Length: 478
Ligand SMILES: [Zn+2]
Image (cartoon, rainbow, N blue to C red; front, side, top):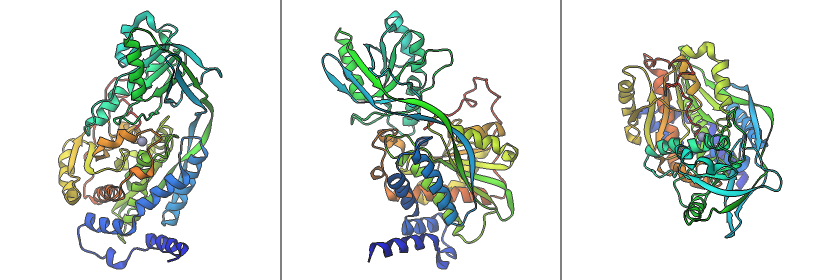
């Protein structure tokens, strides 16, 4: 068959849902999975987003293209789509280079998002090593005029411990640069937060404290961090030259893309399903979070195909700027503040496309038991685990003060941090069948929550910040 004809057929088959399928009396998850495996709609969306649009860092041309594509695709699927304004940071990477002077070693390096650049000729200094943020104090005066390497490893790759290990080690990336600068460091290197030994650099956001000098900050690979640590341990501090061309430009306008499958009985009550449209710039954000975007868009399409509206509205939100600012998450919570008491649940998927396990959940008393009964409908997909959690998802985190029940799609994340924030987070790492299953798990849960006679019990909102309550702390961007 001619390629153009094949393409036309594929597009048509995505839009058309056969009457036989819509009238099918098999259990919902089974019907949705059969349709998804037939059409591969989530995979087609992900392939377009990653291969044809590419990296989508806030403020970039790729991000703008992604917003336009998502809005047009959801419109073509028959939804009324809004682009809700968000102002996002615009940080650009530029050139990056790092080397040990003697013995000569080229290091594999990538700037941390938000970092300032170095002078054009770079920064050159001896390196001292801290085993994570907590170990900085031990270095005392030796930090003065030197480059600090934060070398805490992210060792535990057992899901969901991988996510805990990431959160614990990530403080050296988010807060290390300011902590070291206060003690006189001239630059900061952090060991990449990852679980695969493939000499991959993992980027991610850092945050400068207002009261600390801003020093250049970059991630190096785990292998290169080990090399520097061995050189330091051998007795001579290695000299490293670091050159970063990154800089922060003016903020730019962007948008959250919002589409509703309008409820038939209680249209003002909302079940929100969410992922983030932006990605880091090194790879194409296939697992993080292109997969989530594809699951959310496909959930809406699959559920529309059932041929009748859900009782409550199911709303897809594709957030802007999750990776380096959470501006989209805050903008949504602010713009919809008056409706949040009628948001009956918010589901986020931002852990990649892997074997579905169930959901992490922040719900009121009795909610975990209710969910435990509901997920029996997902037994065929193996997604029956409900894990109580306070940090469920970064983008839905700002809905907490309104007491919106929060759910995060839980997957077997043992490989997520192999690729997370690296140049290797590309489409080939995603298994089409697992992506299809994840999309169906998300769609089925959204449908059940939208149909439930009674909404989930609402959790008590955390005390208002600046309380140190862990429930009030923003979730770490994934
Ligand atoms: Zn993410």
